[in-house]
Every structure is written in structure tokens, then in C-alpha cells.
Amino acid sequence: MDWVSAMQKMLIGGHLIGAEQWLEVLDPYRGEVIDHVARGAAPHVSQAVKLARYGAEQMRQMSLSQRAAILRQVAHLLRQEYQSLAALLVQETGKRIVEARAEVDRAITLFELGAEACLHPRAYQFPPESFTDGASRFGFWGREPMGVVGAILAFNLPLAHAAQKIAPALAAGNAIIIKPSREAPLTCLRLGLLLYRAGVPPEALSVITGIGEEVGQALAAEPEIDLLVFTGSREVGQTLATLGGAKRIETELDAMSILVIAPSADPQAMAELITQCGFTLSGQTPTAIQHVIVHESLHDRLLEHLVPMVEALQPGDPLEETTTLAPLINAQALQRIDEWVQEAIQNGAQLLTGGRSQPPFYMPTLLQNVSVEVRLYREAVFGPVVLIQPYRTLEEAIACINQFDIDLHTAIYTCELEEAFTFARSVRAISVHINDSPALHLDPIVRRDLQEHHMCFEDMLQRIERMSIPKYVGFGIGNKQ
Image (tube, rainbow, N blue to C red; front, side):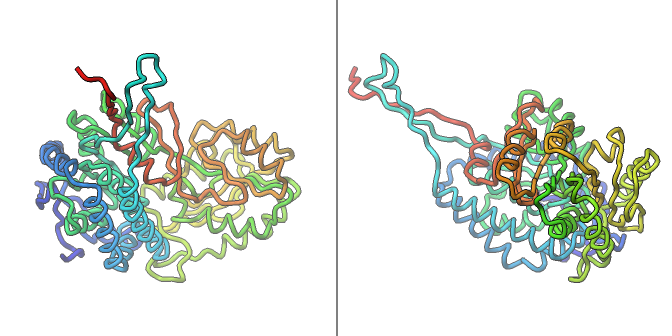
């Protein structure tokens, strides 16, 4: 299939479905239209759900070994399409080619983990004999598919996030309906075709392109969807939770990353870490470092190394290996980030470097003395901006972190074991990393009440459990009627 200047139809239960209206897909770097996708709507969601009910029953009847074989074949096909998928990711998201390759690698790993997890299903023995009337009984808990899963994706990691949802959903025996982001739908459509080729029952998979307010909200409101998973902003997550009613909803919402640099750390190594992890994907990921809290004894030496390193980042064609700064996803992101930065400067922040838009790039920016009242300090900027602030005591740094009203990934670099333990125990965060960056992929889950937080590593078995429901099986031993 030609993926340049074509009209890409939706994949609904194995059928290619067009629409009355079409949406442009832009190359963030060149600003050119690279494709069009169908503008799906609520009727398309209803059509996909009806087919998915049949597909879910097909997946339920499929053996675990069959599901494993399909997921392994998906990984195999991804390897065959490795270079073209990486190039397509660059085209529709603007990420650098090295970042795109890493995303394809991650997707392959997720499907392989899903296949392996199918061969190690979890069941838990339940001892009825622990009750007074249970001496002649034996039982265990197994897992059953939920049925139909809906997944709404963000633009920044379209292939990896799709794999993160699809692999456990299929391994658990569900059907799944994917809503890719408006900005980056092409990779998901390509993945959908590969899934069909790998043997996924057509009715068990749909990819519906369109606008979030139309397709995403229709997915949330659809009563026949058993589980909705969403990656995106807290505001949208709250709207979906309201629309979802009694259905189970899991959301990965806004988060930011904070790095603490203790007195025993190496300032040059820390400058290299910040340059690498603060500007990954041009900061368009929750694991990109946004705040650096550095001990006052290292502050000046850190900046001596950090400022020239950041200024050396090279914007350019993301397909070129030498490019070290990617463009932002669209003009709206550029405008928002610049507004936040200028607001911070007007409220007393000191600009160390950057602080300007050079479309399609926002130049890598370092600021210090940023007021805690401005948006740039309190909210996830999702851009190439890092804020520096000194601290005197570890207690002061911890208090600073614990004032945030947002999910946090945190890290500390220290040679002092007691300092590391104190930090890990005291900070309120969904992840804590000791002498490591916060870029390790974790899975922050907020249940539909948006209060109960769960964090787990990319443990496919746990993902499968979250996309299934428990089922108790009990035996009466020697109870003859």
C-alpha cells in the first residue's frame, strides 16, 4: 500500500471503511501534508463494537498457544517492516530517527512479552478448607477475558502505546478497538494491517481514526465496551471518566519528571544526563526531565557544563543521524510552550539559554528562579524546557517535590545510601529512581475515580490481569449426593 499522499481508510472489523470527511496528516518538520485519514464518528464506533462482540468470542475460544503464535508473528512482521515503520514514525511525529528505531524495538519487545505471557498463565489456589465448613472443598482463581477493550492513544509514542494496549488485550482473549491520535494515526493503521496478517480475527481488531472529541468520547460512552484505556491529559481523562458511567476506565495522565542532584554527584555527568533526558522527543514525554533540583554547592559547576551542552543541541531533519533536537508536533504546541516560558520570564525567571521559537522547533531552554505560581513550574510543559533550582538540605528538596499536585517521576543521584533511602521513603511520587534517570518506562494507572494510583513495571502478566476478570472454580471433594 502507498503510504504517501493516499487516502487511508479506517480498519473496522477487517473492513476498509472511508468517511464523508477526511483529515490531513502533517509532517511536523516540513509542514507538508503527507496523507489523509478518514474522519470517524460515533456510528463507526457502534459498527466496530458490534463486530468486536463476535471477535471477542473468537478470541475467548482461541487457545493460549494460538494467541502466543499470533503475537510472535506480529513481532516477526514488525522486524520485517523495521526501517519503514521507523521512517513513518519520523514522518508523522517528527521524532528523531534514533528515537523512532527505539520505539519500534519497544513495540517488538511488547508483543514478544505478550506471547511469552500466554505460556505462563497465572492461577491462584484458594483454600476453602481454611473455613469451618470447607474441609472437603478445593478451589482456585483463574482469569477470564473482559470482552471488548477500547484504547485511546497519544501522539508521542503511537506504535509503542498501541503495542502496550494491544498485546495484553489479545493475550487475555479480548477484542480491541484503537483510537490513534489525530496527529499520528498512520503507524497505528499500518500496525493494524500487520495484526490481520499475523492471524488476529478481523472482527477482534478495529482502528478508528478521527477527532478525540468525536471518536474518543463515543468510545467512552459506548455501553458495550467493557474496558477503556486512555493516555493523555488529566482534563480529557476526567471527561472520559464522566462519560464512561460504570465501565472500568484506566488512564495514564499528565506527569512530569524531577531530578535531584546531591552534593556527592558528578556535575559533568549530571549535565550530560540532563541534556540527554531533558530533551528526549523534544521533551514531549512525561519521563523527560523538567525540574532539576541541585545542591547549592554544585549549582554553578553544573551550569558551567550544562549550558554549553544544551546550546550544542542541533535542530534539523529528524531523518538525519546528526540531528539532536526534534521539532514539536504542531504550531499549537510551539505557541503554548512559548507562552508559558514568557510568562515565567515576566514573573522573574532568569533565562540561561533558549527561550525562543524557531518553527518547527522550540530551542532547548534552561531557566532558573522560576516562580512556583506560574504554569511552567506547576504543570507538565511537554516541551524542551528544563528548570534549575538550588537546595540546601535534602528535607528542603523533598518538601519542594511534595508540593506538586501532579503525578511525578523522580530521581536522585547520590553516593550516600542513607540519603537515597530517605529520598525514596519520603517523596510522594509514582516512581523513584536511585542513580538512574526517570526515563525507565513505567505504567502509572489512575482508576476511574482519578484518585487510586497504581504503578507497575511493564510486566505483561500484570497488564493481562488488568485486561481480564477473576473467575473462581471450586470442587467439592467427597460430597456425594
